[in-house]
Length: 304
Image (cartoon, rainbow, N blue to C red):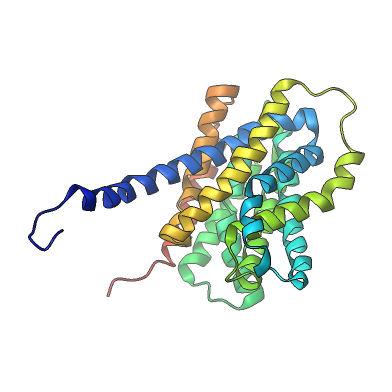
């Protein structure tokens, strides 16, 4: 608004852009990360979990490498062992667990368990760092775990998905540990540079295992395209968009994407793979996503 009380077009454009850009990026990121579980379902049977994750780490790190190169002077050599540790805890191992789960169960199972990472982050902060958890978040954790139990009781094509749920839940727990380590040891460093460094470290450490388990049979074009999309789009570009959102609207508001990812994962799997939405997945998803929403709302500032 100008001093004369008239609004000039030049003044309206930035506000308008901010108004539509954030919801667009949140929705786009949720669609991208939801598609990652679809790509896992397509590529994991052909590659195997560890070779697929190696491809994902290499491509994701390559996309984010410009951020790391720009911030290289701010990362001292003594910090690289910690970056390598986080690369294992926050990328290589959980990615492998979700890739393994994708061979055993529908895409929605992995996406639903993945959303528990938000609650596990709070739990790890409470147990290991003494952060207050609060009654509401404690209820949220119990509700989320109840959702995991319900999900583990389900079946897909007559087979139990319990082991896939266990793998996905373990992966989400590792994300909770990794998130706390990043927050405490890399505060002040550019987040995208840290992401690139941890992905690159994970790729280096996982390489011998990927070579040892690389499939002997030829891999078709469809799994290759799915693996490339998983690394470039879902990991590299997805992380870049997420950190852009954190810088613009803050981490709590950016975490809203957590609620949307399973919805997109289930939709993509239903549309493109013909995977059904079972009653067990619906009940478990409601419990888990509701618990995440409840846990997040407890950290929101109260109105004065």
